[in-house]
Image (cartoon, rainbow, N blue to C red; front, top):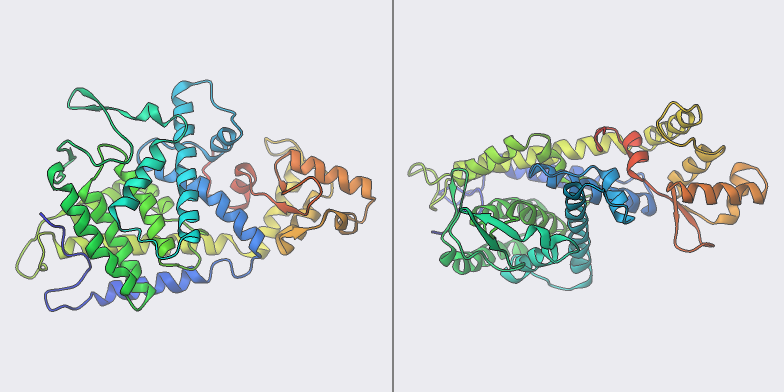
Amino acid sequence: MYFTPILPIDIKGNIDQELLSLAEEVCIKSATLGGAHNTHIINSIKDLLRKTNSYYSNKIESEGTHPIDIEKAMRKDFSSNEYEKKLQLLSLAHIDVQKYIENSLSNKENINIYTQEFILNLHKEFYTKEGMDKFLDINYENKHVNMVPGTLRENDVYIGKHIAPKFSELDMLMTHFQNEYSKAYKQSTKALKLLYALSSHHRLVWVHPFLDGNGRISRLFLDASLQDIKLDGYGLWNISRGLARNSDEYKKHLALADMKLQSAIDGRGPLSLRGLSYYLKYMLETALDQIAFMSKNLQLNLLGNRIEKFVMLSEEEMLNIKPLPKYASTLFKELLIHGEIPRGKVQNIINKSDRTATTLIKTLIEMDYLESDTPKSAIRLKLNAGFASYLLPDLIPNR
């Protein structure tokens, strides 16, 4: 059985204007994010959001690892608890595949993300990362099945009330998926391409191509499709946070789009046009909510004030962290504005000796608040998870 309709188009061939207007609003508002910030701060925020995206996507599967623990894993500081270590490795795999997607789309011309090859490769990249072999032993119908990364399932499955297509139909369905959603490349506006991207996310979940990992891979694929349409500002917000805030609501709307054709006016395909429209409205409103959240929190003056207060509270030992050194606030706010500063200019910024400036830089790098490409190159602000949890409250949950 095919999964048409692929877009919210009625039996007369008209696209849902409410959804198209919402999609246009997402494109416009997303493009305004980051306008007040320099490239280095934007890259630092994007780096932070890869970690939070990993946290929230895994949280939807009830396996979220706090961003602070993700950062520990990135330094090879793993939990002594074997289960918690597995979750840390799961998060690292997610972040690595996000980077793989970004590199693939930026370094290759005319890559088609809707092909079976691309989607299978996402699964393979994810499940061949360090420690992911622990997730390949799948308990299926009271039997242990060894899942092979990057291959279509060879079993018929059901997920809740959704009976997934038969495994014998998967090649046909993935070809159908490629043929239908590759039409996104021919669309005239980003708003239309956005509707294709969000619709394809559900249809990939509906096909359920893998024995396990479908939710994570489908959300990574959604990230890929939003980057592929060059949605300006995406990366300074991500949709997984919005979906994870009420994962039951997300799953409810996925189920609505699973519905079969309800009546003669419910579209032309075997699946419900109305169900797809409900799902798309939910996804677009979730995207707008996340854009509004980040837009509010990324205001330059607000971040500057929060930096000043964070440093002050740390100096007064009112936070459960090591106190920051004197002059940290002055340097942080300068980096917030300029993004990158040569080391030799720090003494002028804080109006102290070269020795004091050198000590300040060394201390803040060791404390993970600054980063630099080499021991002598320019410095940049680093938004570690603890720092960011204060600067961007509600992005990173309290522990």
